[in-house]
Image (tube, rainbow, N blue to C red; front, side):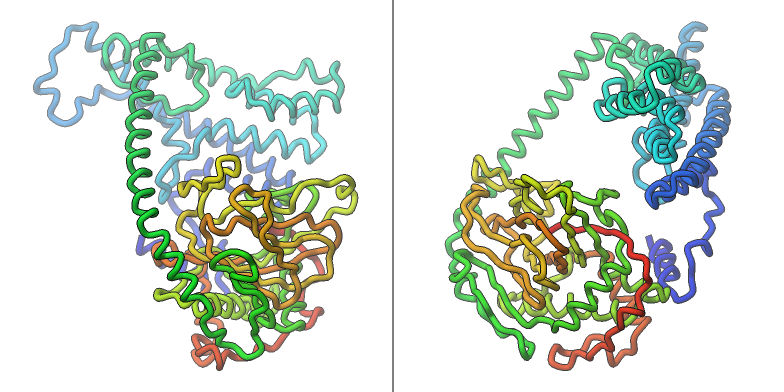
Length: 556
């Protein structure tokens, strides 16, 4: 862990590039795979294909070596050989099952990386998932069909991949697509693996020799019926016990919450309304005017020129789908999203790809909002950044007709909202550690995009906030504040979305890196000044930013 932190520190130093670091123990197939995925993400299909195909070649070289190493003497596991007693046939069975189990274990070995807790799931099939789309983007439909059909060898019922095959077939033509078959070496690999699994599951069922299948794609019929039923009973028992424990914990939590809710809510109402710390910042709406609790709208947080500068920074520095696994429109197909995190902006500033003072402004403004929230809500403990994102969402002109969806549907920031049952379940995948949220708007020259609060039914609106430059809306992240964003139907809506936690254990890792980078880039006098003495930043002009804009992400 300490050495990983050292590496991260070195990577932040000026002039240091990623290519300066070389892993001397890297597995060739994994290196090629990672490069292929990177080029795939960067929408460079030709380079992605080259590296992913090479990764497959290296994979089977590594697989052959791994399997060969399994052909050794029987491993008695320590001193068990002193008590081991078996006739010839039992000894042969034990040895052969150990060899087969070892060979199956090569799947896990080849999908594992140093420093990672778990291997990559479905590692080999994932190559063909990437390749089929990369070949499609390159216009090579024959190869796209071949890779898609190869992927279906492992997951024949995958709905999306079957749709892809149907689409590629329609484009290429049935007469040309039908003869294209999955890759023969993969078909042979799969068949061999299934035969080995059948033997291993049989020995598990009959002789009690344990076997843990490393693959998720193994058909159910490969497992003996008696073993399937036994595993089903075990899973059901485990699930029932987990459910009973979960229900008991929820009952305890409910009792505790009911006991404390009234006093906590009253305490929050009384404590709201602390000082705003900065000149020019004023309260526009408080909780009473917003028909709720722990809500506030303030104006004058930043100037018009600062708003424009941050918009320019977004368009210059953002990456397509940043934070949404490559999805340009994570919440609606009618809008595109462009975004950049604080740390990414500072790194780009360090590399002179964006004006460094613009990145400093972004960092400075997020800290300003954090202090405003902390002071206004009179919090006894400090707020820590959980996640920060500067984002612009833009209406796609030809996708606005008869539009009925939201830009972001009603949700709660730290629990899973069930609007029909009017309950909010505070459990993963919700960000349960988030305590306060804030959005700082950078413009208002667009149509739609109104922020609004609702009741727990996600339908009854309680308040609206119209975005404009320098306006911030802040609120507690719990079930008392369901909220959403109405459709942006024309123009571009830009804002800084911020989430905070009271628990330092969930402090955003990137923020810590950003803090360290700021200390490297700026003098001690500029960093960590009290709010009334925050330094003015020299704003960059539009010509400072690169002419090419890249796309990015958002959550609110």
